[in-house]
Length: 582
Image 1 (cartoon, one colour):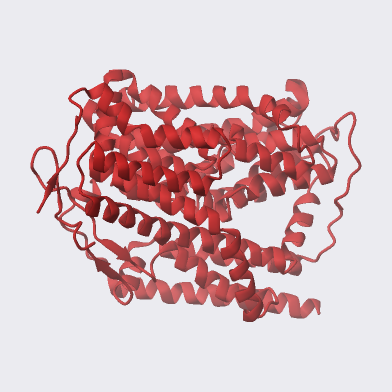
Image 2: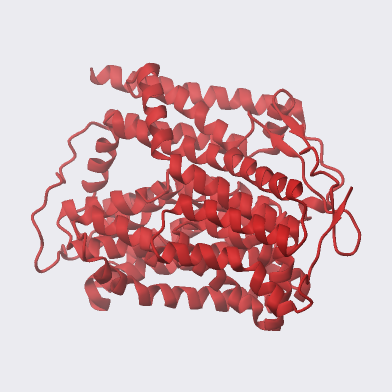
């Protein structure tokens, strides 16, 4: 027997929307009260089930199946990606090679302004793309303090610098979850975000240096600022538009570091600038390692980049899926729900693409990297287990949040809230990024914010006749500006630089910059919605697609052979360079 959605169960749209929003209001309240994130998300799911059953009349079976369906998507592919990314990062740390990378970064220049560009902005973006989950701010801020930065400035500029890369963090996880929830193709969201954030990416480096040293001192290093920001923005735009959501941070971060290093070979600032009163330097700024050791330390991330580029190609996906994919409907949920107009609600099949998933590319990366960085597979298993224990609560949180998103969509709660938000009329695109900002401010995660709000953003936009990719992307883009004032981010930054107990000082340092950047994104989103239609990528909604292009499987396998050759060259080069050193 099929169940029909109710859009206005209380016969008063405002009241129905308020009741539908109870789980959202609860998760915000619980996080403000500093409840553990995993507990808050589990209770939010429970509240959503109660509202769906009691108010919307959804059968218990459908409610539970909806949550289960969402939780499955949260675990795979989302948590699968996060586990792989953090595992790879942990391998480099435990093997000692991350110390090589840190020393290499610290040795490039003694000028504090340029160190901020290299470490807070470019290296922080690379870390956001490769690992995420607080690693960029914690590591970058600690490095800057070790170099002699004022702790407040070190944490503050790292939080502000972390604006540009957040939407593509953890190998594109926020964009991937936005696609899963909204039914808009991942590539379209990646392209739209990649046409919004490069503006911030150009501005943020200048912003950071002005905050540190003032306008006059910033102009002295303007060539470095321009090279850093423009190179990052170009790679971010290109990668997001032509490769996908998984690599913009990694490639843009690496390329901007290389470009700045090349510039510094031919240009130097007239004077070396430092803070007037600096704590004692604790990090060695003399390069202690050979080029072979540096390349070996970076090799896991070079291999990861090759894998991710290959995994983003449609023929490669087709080839891998031809030998490794499971698809199935959720029994009892498929064809079990009708929309309010009587048409079936399309429930997508669950795809377990265990070979072509981005997380699998990361797993294959680690299998090659483990012996390359001098570790045994037994050690690798121990680190993998510790990674799972490290991520146990984030995994529960993400699975629960996505489960909530699915029941809200299937019960009709998202549509109710969307119709209420549509009352803002033509102003909705302006307010759209604020939802993302609020979500990240309270949850500390662009991924969680996108899971909560992207279906709401999409449905509201469709109601108003605005292209939904604009508002869904605005949720991700607006969310990045909330990261710098999120209590979780503030706590991580304060702990990294020894300011525990002074989190309020750090919040005051970043809060106005968060509002300024949010306003810029709000204006830009409004222009995209109404004055710049040419900037919106062409796409088809996933649920409406009745046919899929058959990928050239043979071509895909040929690409995989080319990948194998490229990987072999990287491995042989690293081994030969280190053998010569020995």
